[in-house]
Image (cartoon, rainbow, N blue to C red; front, side, top):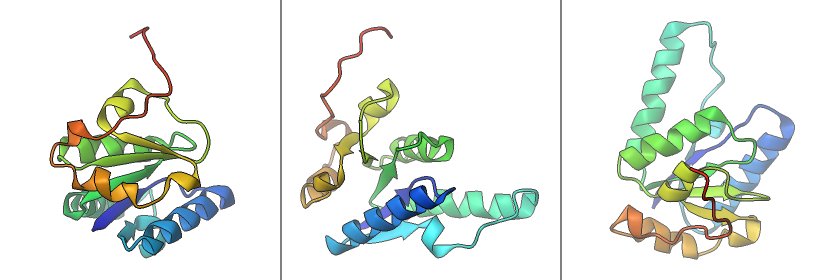
Length: 146
């Protein structure tokens, strides 16, 4: 199974977290696509480079069996990738090293995993679900102010 790994990589702590997550997912036998591991940084002032990277990321999400989103840091790009994946019918695994729930929309479109101990063979259950809305949801918080 092929996972698209989404997550911020703008500082040393974020890079270390993505390295650790990627290694753990690969140890489970998953093929992991991570733009931070496979592509050089781009010049964000160059519209052609930005367009190519955007198109590549959208294509990689569509080709993947699911998206594993590292949500620590609440990176806007990662959050967008989870929404794109959900709209494309892909299962989304929302991972936080610490904490958990922070958005009604992600809560309803993803399965939450908290802490590195949660990265185990259960991931395959979530990815193999035929109805992405039937996957187990994080139930740690009830939010009633929406």
